[in-house]
Length: 569
Image 1 (cartoon, rainbow, N blue to C red):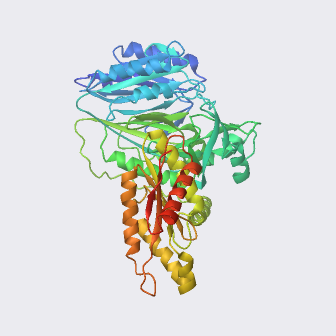
Image 2: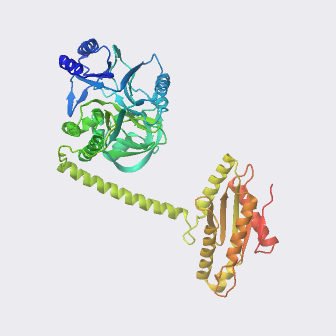
Image 3: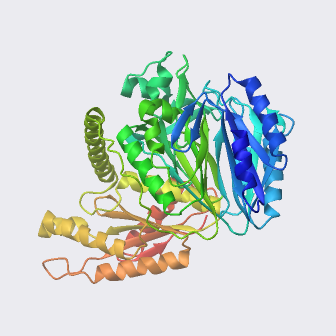
């Protein structure tokens, strides 16, 4: 086979760069070394990389326990190799060094990463590398020898790394790269929050309950030897930096914690996800068609080993349409994905990268007919999941309505007393932290009891609604907080507002209310208003009291129908 490749290489008139990638199974350690040496002898000027992997991708086929060699020739582009062995160099140092190298070259188009190491926290490296220009495509994955622990040796030229990172940098002014992802899992159930982690991989609590309880209570998946396989269909689903990421729990501990192969952080919002093979394959087909339109001359693929464990005999179907260019790749413990300046590790994702020399001509490519992925069992499950999701959406909508009712006054639709107290406390804290002014207005209707006694409670209710409408009109939506304290008393919190402006707002409210024709007799409603400004050391109680005292001054001392400002302490 090597002789055949040498003849093919010799037939190419001009070769500016050569990449040789070698994948081999963990059981063939000695064979791997022999092939590595032979390849370097045959192609001494080539960049050689690769890894120990259990499952490999060759064209549209899944290869298991096979030795796979791909040779990629460039005629106007170059490839460079950089290797970082752990723990000889820290991940942050490696990221900083690689960033410096790619920043110094304007023609870098893509970086392919191979990583190996158990519970390898790659974020320091990825964070530094993410500072390179967003146009540089980053792809690759964490190698795995079948243990599902991220173990797998790396190849870098003549060297073998048991733990570390290998980076292949693709350079060329005329090199063009297309990259896209396929996921296919669907969110299932309500959103939850991670409330405790131990390190980046061990989740202790979700919604303040043991994390494993989610799998036990919702899915009936218990701790034990089968946990990993049972959880394949239902990974954790989250959104981060504009990307959909999945996290597959590898095992559940007796203390109720879950261990993952990629990072999760306290405070992140997560859901369970459901893996429907039909939906997964449909998304993969869409991905292949999109990349095919780029008309690539070569393809690189990275897919998740857990994805293949779920898909089983259907795994090869997502590769079946990749016949329009040579394809090489492997099944990874975790896949690298980039969104702008953030490079992250994903699970359950199929990453497809196309490269070509020469400007691509985006066009519609005719591919072989897509296979039907219909399966009666999965179709029934899909309908059930759709029913569950629709029911959850309806419950969420009802919960939002009840939440709104709980904070809204039913008559005026302003914030009620409880919501106003909560917002005042929050806004007071924000104002103190930001060093900005905060004003409050307390208002009530003069002789409101007389209105009810003379014209009935319907007239009184209309008067309250008219006053509430004016408060809404004279305050800033989403900035200020007008509320009804109860009875005929209203309370308005004004963000970033000093006394002079608060007085202007109060005078406008006072004038608009006085102009209302709300009473059957033709008489006009009058109001008394007190204003107070937040001061250093204030809490909601002291600020409320000063506003109330100002209102008392307006009603009692100034004879109602007046505005009074609280004096500073």
